[in-house]
Image (cartoon, rainbow, N blue to C red; front, side, top):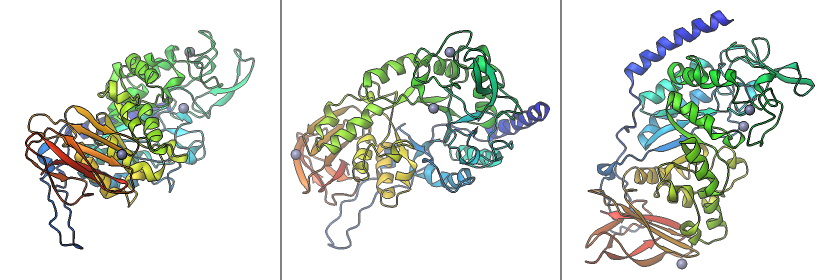
Length: 479
Ligand code: ZN
Ligand code: ZN
Ligand code: ZN
């Protein structure tokens, strides 16, 4: 088994290096689809036409969370999303975040968050199946190649805190049998990163992690050499195998509250790659502290919860006043509206989602679009408009011009030739307008979301009466 594994690893290393030679996985976008047009065939009114925003491409990409909880059908997921990467790239997606790709205890039913064999990416028969819920190793390789061919980076979801699906052994630290044995015959058919009770808490080093949040029998101890070696230090560690052989470009670390940020830092110091941590907390100070310690990006949970409050309480001033990660750490904040967890019990209700996307796709931070939201037929065209706005005129300093219970108006000041934008969110049941001061003097403005089809004029001081549609939003910029 071990010999087979080494052969396979060597073979895959060769194919991966060929792949890396022929594709460059840069942040460059495919050339996008172009103008947003608004055609009013009903009224025959003169319809405002915007300019081609692609003249203003900035470096702001968008990550697609390319899964939801319990994706169906099982065993086909890698193929399903591989088919979509052309369209996603054209829309401006520059990263996809995949679910944990390795075999979990629940085998073909596992969403990957119960990791058993980190090197079984759908290629060993164990836990009742060879393929993972998402497909075979070959299908994963194909997906990654297709993404790279589209200049899309592929982010691996790393569950480093705990394991599941090992065999039973006597554990002297707990004085009973525990399921902490992982080897070729016990949940680790690859034979790579075999583990035993010393690799879990408690052990000869200590009782538990400093965080002490997770204290099950299979809570990994990251101070153990065996764990560090196999996670990131060895040449065929999980980190290096995923990056150099499988072709993953970056990392999303699961449930980082359950272990010290120093281990995320050590992993990334070893192999690099764009990285985000799931520090699941609405307290922005705690998330900022984690970002400082780990030295990587974090999901902006504070922003998520503030947006929820703003929309649910019908108080959009919370968007201005609420503490969020992006407001202090714009370069490290990964903003989002929904994910595989929140989707099961929505934090932001469906009716508010487009408002939330209009917010994160015009404001600083690196925005994420959730698969089910993007594939929602009622949302997709609107999200495409907002994604284009994000990667073009969502540029320059942000200034909130107005906020009250049902209105929020913010300006991006632009920079250089980039004109910036004004986003106007309106929760009122009527179309509203409000006079604001902008950076544009004597300019005609166009709503690049198409919500308002007539143009507006700014005066010689830049003042304009901006409009937003009833219970909707507009994003204004020069025509
Ligand atoms: Zn430990
Ligand atoms: Zn977890
Ligand atoms: Zn108002």
